Structures are given as C-alpha cells and as structure tokens.
Length: 321
Ligand code: DGY
Image (cartoon, rainbow, N blue to C red; front, side):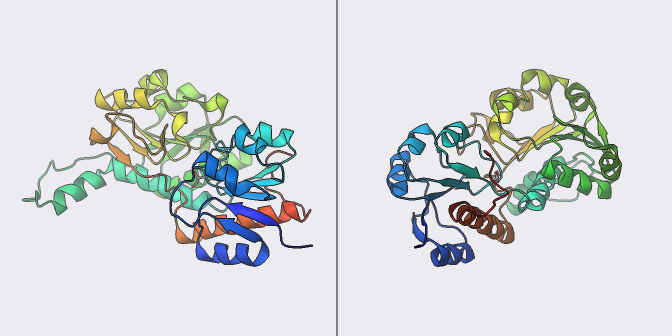
C-alpha cells in the first residue's frame, strides 16, 4: 500500500513538514496566506486526509466536494470551523489536538490578565515614545492581581491550568462550568463552584475557557457585563463569538467594566469598530498556543491523527465517534 494522500492548507513548523513528507504523499499551500474556499476544494481532490487550520472554514460544501476524504485533522483544540455534522454524515473522522496546548494557552491568558491589570502596554508605549519625565505617585496606577478573585468560565484542561497558576498569586478562585469537578479536584485547585451570575458579580478577573458552540454564542453579553464589577476585567483566549463584541466595546467605553484582554475576536482578523481606540483593552492576534514547542507538538499530533485514522489504528482525538 502506498503512502496516504494528504492536503495541508498552510505550511507548519519544519519538523512537522519533514514528518508529513516522510509518511504521506503530501501536497500543501506553500504561500503564507489563508486559502480561499475554492482553493481548499481543489486541494482536497483525490486526498484521503485534510489538515486544516482555525482559519479554514470546512463546511458542507467543502466536505461534499471531497468524495475521497476520510479524515479532517484540525490543527487546534477547537473545531468550530468544521461542520462536524456534515463530516459525520459522510463517514469522515474529525480530529483535534487537545492537551498539547493547554499550558501554553493558560500562560497567555495570564499574560493578558497581568498586562491589562498593570497597564503594561500603555506604560511601554509611553516610555519608548519619550513621554516619561519623572517618577510620579499617580503614574499608570493599575489593579492588584495578588489576593484578587479570579472567575473561570469553563473548567476543562485550560481552565484548570489557569486556576493552578492563581495559587502563586494567593487568589480566590471561582468557577462556573457545565459539569462540576469532583470535590477532591476542587480542593486541590482551591476552586469554588458557583452559578454564572455569582461568578460575574464576585470576580475581579474573569477568564473564558469554554468551547464555542451554539450554546456559548454571546455567553457574555450586555446583561452579563452589567453584572460584573465596575473594577473587573474580562480575558478571552477561547473564541471571539463567545463574547458579544459590540456590547463589550460599549461596556469598555462607558466604564461598565475596567478593562479586557483579548486574543480572539468575533470576525477575525477584523476588530469591532471602536475596540482599537480604547486604552483599557489589550489586543493580541490569536496567539494563545503560539510557542515554538507547542505549535510543533500540535503539528505532530495533527499529523499522527491523520495517519492513525488512515491506517486504521486507534485515534483518541476523533471528536465525532
Ligand atoms: C485552538 O487550538 O483552538 C487555538 O485557538 C488555535 O491556536
């Protein structure tokens, strides 16, 4: 049996490319850009495997135009860019890359939290632009992180990794999740299970770690923002549409909440009008998992997922079985 035919929508780190070239008959987009839907449809013709990214919309049209496809391996833990129902109907396995990016994404949630609370970006711009004249008692006063209350929405792998880091800052940790953790795990994370409303009302920092589904669309909207403290901050490293961005901009403009740290957006890479003009928000370009090591590990996992499915080996990362 020859090597399986695989299409990759964009070049991945070099160890992953070497592995894929050795083990598959690989075609890929070597240009550093997102492919158009028609280009993905053309690329996937005659291929048994597709490795896709969060920027690729793999909808019913793409799936139905790819009769030889057996597996769609997403280079991400989230897979809301894929029509899983259509894939399942066509007996196509969909896989993701859980676990390998947990700690790296939790690190970035913390980086955003610290940055917005202590006004790091504003201070950097001020210092490098030569505006700094002297030490001043009221220069860039921010909010304390240590001893504050952290609210975690979604206590899966990443939510738990964020909670573990709060220990070093002696924070109280609240969480709201679809399923409650066993008591022992709650105790070891020092986390208190509360209702969504209680979390919104009590937390000084709220960090989102739920997947994006129909049920989590605009999970944080005008009502939720109003329930938050005026001094509280919202951190989103999960998926943009979980937060109603229009309502968020309004809340940030009118002091409904103190600030936000965002790595993801409703219509990436577009920003909601007004967002970039606010000084109380820190904006990153969806880089939660972007460390050299993690992006390589994600690629190796995505490649292994394709090979496992295509060679009939068990694959624990299939999300539609
Ligand atoms: C994921 O894995 O879902 C990330 O958003 C991609 O970096």
